[in-house]
Each structure stands twice: as structure tokens, then as C-alpha cells.
Length: 166
Image 1: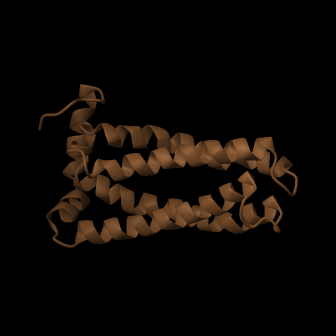
Image 2: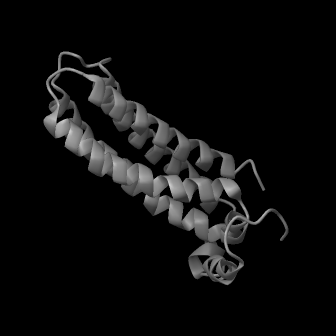
């Protein structure tokens, strides 16, 4: 398989082994497995995106303004975690079914690099700002919302682009 190489050549055998796992073969060879798993993956994206938007828009100072920031974050957190979990549970079999294609796909690597950054930011830095946040938005909460939305947009856009770049 040709294409522009983003990852070290030494990683290719690992991706070939991933693709040849039993789960990878089942998903790849089934007529229904990939589309069903992809649909559930997108449901996870909806959960994750909805929870992020609720919290980030509140941090920005728009939406649910009658609710303290801490309340919005607390109520959105379980949905955020559920979305992340669902996306991981479905993303792994999707990767296994076409690991070599992903190895050669720059969008895949952009997603894999930006995803841990977005997760660390969301569950780390954003948590600190929210803990110290007043009831309303300020420049810190707006900055956190802006960075969060930018990171997660990068993850989502790169993930979506994986299917369009082969």
C-alpha cells in the first residue's frame, strides 16, 4: 500500500499485526460490522460533543447562564465520560479493521496526537479553572472554552477526514 508516510517505518509491522487480529478480520470481512460500529461511534461523538458544547458554551458565558458553571460541569461530566468510553470501545475495532490504511493516513495521526491532548486538557486543565470559576464567565473561562472547542474540533475533523483520505 502506497501513500505518504507520517509514522516511522518501524511501526508498520505493528499495524499489520493489529489488522490481522481476529477482531480486525471479523469487522473487515463482515458486511454489517463496520457500519454498525461506525454508527455507534458517531452516537458516542454526539454524547461527547453535546456534553462538551453544554459546558464550553456555559464557560463562554452563553447558554444555561442561570446555572452556576460548577453545576453544568457536574451534570455534563457523566455524559462526557460516557461519550469518551463509547468512542474508545468502538474506535478500537474500527482501527483494527483497517490499521494499515490508518498507518498511512495523516488524518489518523492528527487525530491520535490531538486526542490525548484534548483528553488531558478536558480532564485536567479545564477542571482546575472550573474549580476556581465564579458563577459567571470571565476571561479565564472563555479562554478554556475556546481552547477546548478548538482541540475537540481538531479531533473530530481529523477523525471524520480519515474516511475521506485514503
